[in-house]
Amino acid sequence: MPIFYERRQLVTPGDLLAENEYINGENTYKENGKIYATRVGLFDYENKRVFVVALKAFYIPMVGDTVIGKVLEVTLGGWMVDIRAPYLAMLRASDALERPVRPQKDDLPSLFDVGDLMIAKIVAYDRTRDPLLTVLERGLGKITRGQLIEITPTKIPRVIGKKGSMIAVLKEHTGCQITIGQNGRVLISGKSPDDERLATMAIRKIEQEAHTTGLTDRITDMLRKEKGEKTEKEVVENVSKETWKTDR
Image (cartoon, rainbow, N blue to C red; front, top):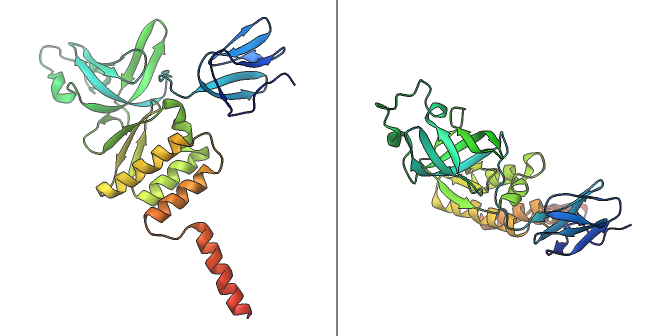
């Protein structure tokens, strides 16, 4: 089998990953029937396509993504927004106001000013123009409270988990409202600074150990220990002890 690395094994630029019938995917190139890595990251493959998940990558915008952006400039027609991509995004005034724009009368900085954070959705993007945003849908708009952290964008799926399993664990055990931007920004809003600190600690651990297995269970146990609760293993052991005493 002409694959030279195991899944989730670390590779570096120039490493030979596969050859012959395989197809080169993200962060790879093919030359003379052989596929090489172009980025430092984790090797993976799906069917016949091989690719590298970059450990430190820019966010690549996709239409429909929810992102957390920072306003860098207010223009006559809207706002230029940093979304951690190689290029700035544009939020047009018409995508922020539920009425026709009046350039001479509308005070755009009163809605979003330089330095403000927002939750937005990407509504258009291709290589010929910068990403376009909207904040008109439910749950989008200006961020007024909470703690913002940044992680590697490629680790976001691990924070969410399969069918939302990881994010459900985080919310349940910290009591925090957690809003995830596909661009690697995460907004944490809890009832207390301690709750937010706990959620931040867990997300940092997920980012560091995203390539490992059994992570959801480890995060659950960590959160329980931090809150002084018994881990699942300890609960099972206690039940076993009580059962043994009853049998005696």
